[in-house]
Length: 322
Image (cartoon, rainbow, N blue to C red; front, side, top):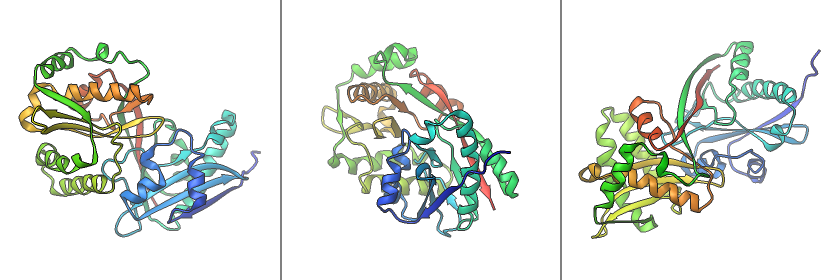
């Protein structure tokens, strides 16, 4: 008979030293899930942390709706869900299997003391969602899930253009014929970003509630200085007009694309292809090993993103109701 493992679970609604220290134990953490980033992005958060004996095991952040009874995934945030620690991944597979199931079922029981519905995502390392399915079945919770994909580019190989689709190679030649220059974005550029974003992205979306949420999230990113400006690229005309940009957020393990925008009148000049080439070159220079396009789920977007040499990677959207 399997030995029942005892796990200690805490749920916090504010950042303290224990939470900050716990996050340092997460294996290859995504900055989009970090306590400080999430609290700056969305003030109503919960953070579940779990221990086995004295060992940190799992970190699980939740962003709450206005009712404070449900969690959701804000725009621009990816892989908002449970993350395991370096200690956990050091265990043998059979021990990880057993402990993963125990901590997931115990965590669901604990979080449903505070929330009625949770919506979250798996991450690119931990794709086994069976523990959630089994736990939901054992507890008579309602679970829904669907597979999603993103596109990842390996930055360690710096021969980026060799991996580009011919269309993007032609676009680079086209952009090179324009009188343009590029540089990293600085804080004084930030006021120029929102009008381009509204004109290029938001005006193409029919649903007002989606436009409003995107603009609110975009404004939070700008106003709270949450971007990685040392990896965010802008393209300018000879008259110093910003005409396109890639906004990124990065840590040591990966860089995540938040949005890519080009002014409407410059879209056909190959600026998007130029922005990605410049972005990849800069990430390589900064020794960041991978670039995440943050989603590739429609055919049109996937066709474009894989055209830069990116490979597909699976994750899941999951909703569980008590």
